[in-house]
Length: 163
Image 1 (spheres, rainbow, N blue to C red):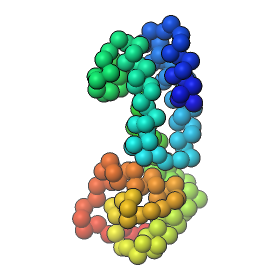
Image 2 (cartoon, rainbow, N blue to C red):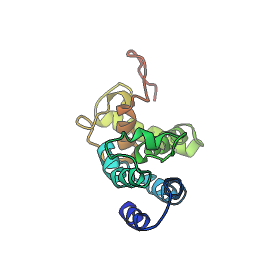
Image 3 (tube, one colour):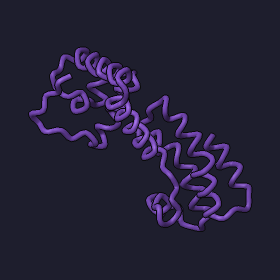
Image 4 (cartoon, one colour):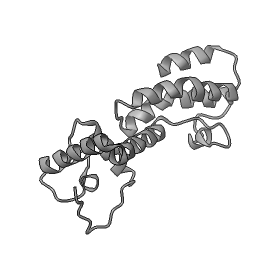
């Protein structure tokens, strides 16, 4: 999908602002929808963003060696990054699961208990997860790994959850 976008836009005579608008308005909602069902690592997101970064730098006549943060800056181009978009989606989903209606809350608590029992720990699951210690294939587990890598959950050391 991204390669197709880059291929089509590369052939068109568009300004850098038009390309940024097309990316943010047309492709980002489709990518965001797909991110609801999967969790991707930072390296995968960077690999997916590389063609878009190159396209934006080409359209704006910037050198390829320019840092990507320039095109991600809201005041300049405001290109949305897939990894940051995923962090936003994951944190919203976890909050909805944990604080949602009764059924969602029960499902979330059951999933957290299962993860805690599987790894025999009384620690907060979100604090103990890493990709090497916690090779899970559940959406909640993968989401917790990504959130832990960015230090979103920062509990005190003596915290023991009451699930």
